[in-house]
Amino acid sequence: MSKSIKIPREELLRMISILGEIESRRLDPFSVDVSSLLARLREIIERERDVETITLDAETLYRVSIVLGLQQRWIRERASSLFIDAGMIYSKILGSDARMLVAALLQAWRPIIRLEQISMDLLLRGYQHFLSRPTRGVAMAEELKLAVERPGVYTAIESQISEELRGLLAELASIDGWIDYWDFVRSRGEGEKAARAYLLSYLISRGEVEVRINTLSREIKIRAAKAPSEEPRTTSLAITVGR
Image 1 (cartoon, rainbow, N blue to C red):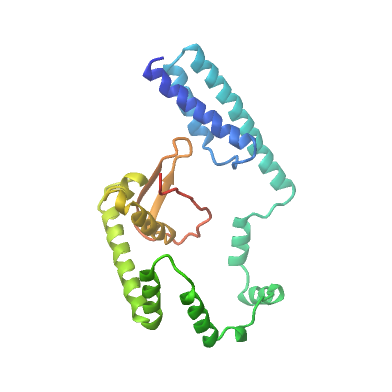
Image 2: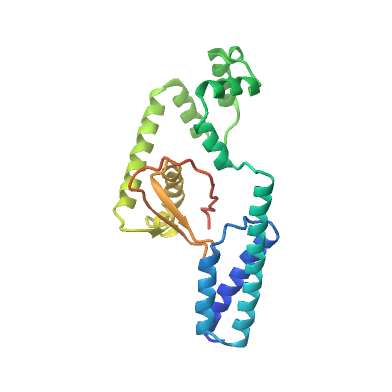
């Protein structure tokens, strides 16, 4: 099998696998851009007309029809039951009177602790307890003890992290357009990969870095945002840094 035929075959098998995940209800039926997928199928079948490719293309089309059916069913069920999703709740909260929201909070609030139960004395006793526990290294215990006894250490650490965040954001902003996530976090070597990924997660959470994910190819692209996003984060992304 030539390489030119093998690549479309692998891509079709990946499409079938993702559509199968949706069919088995493990993925959201709207997580796949059906129009882009159909356009890609058309490109493949026009370029490769061998029996195996045609068979896989037909299998993919069949699974696309199932996904479209699931999308239609999802919309019909929500419409018939007057389903209230997160977006509708968010809009209703924004349009509600502040006093009504406070009254609703007081009616539903069931605090599990009282403020009087937490005191400075209890916090100090908690610190002493953790410092007395055995550690994997003496140096770590000494550093933790130093941090508790000298609050200024926290300020220095926070300042250092803020400086590193600004430097990482400036580095990303100097790159024109989108860049592959893994290329960026590995650009300083494997030794700094975990630290760069950790700092990058802060910038993404704060809306200072945009993320674009290709569901089919599993590529993750990032770029510096022109302005921090004020939209709430509605999805989460788990990345294995040790890959």
